[in-house]
Image 1: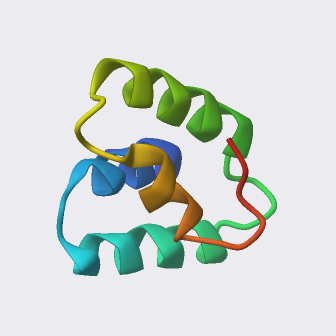
Image 2: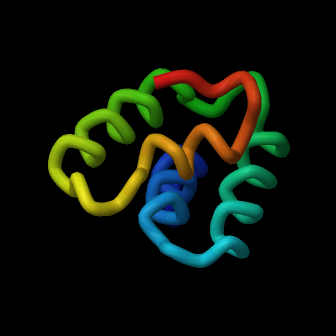
Image 3: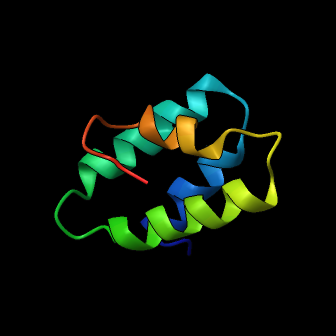
Length: 68
């Protein structure tokens, strides 16, 4: 089984807009106990490793409260 945090990260790597909706829904559904700090750390690492895929922008689109 995939943890919600890992699911969000996987969805952020996809280029499809539907996957952003999925990530947003999981973040909202698990609000309060999802590990946002871990997601943000991983997003920052992925952004450095995959410069041609704007992981940070995709993450920021999932919620107005997200920061990296």
